[in-house]
Length: 103
Image (spheres, rainbow, N blue to C red):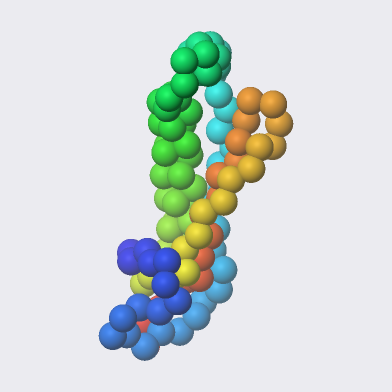
């Protein structure tokens, strides 16, 4: 499955199948919260949160690809990611794009 953040697949004529998305709500754990609190005292990257968001993006992307495959897509174009805090200690990550099939 080709994933692209541009609006076409170079060298291919495409048929649009529709919007596909994948979402996940990931929560922080106590260990990450404690270490993050300590890190804010000295500054720098909070690696526990970075790893949590990387994992969440991977899950959201997989769910988006699964939805595209169910439609018979060959690629997902114009892929975008978004995130939002949904409650204290939890974030939503969404991956979305346009599922297309080659003509």
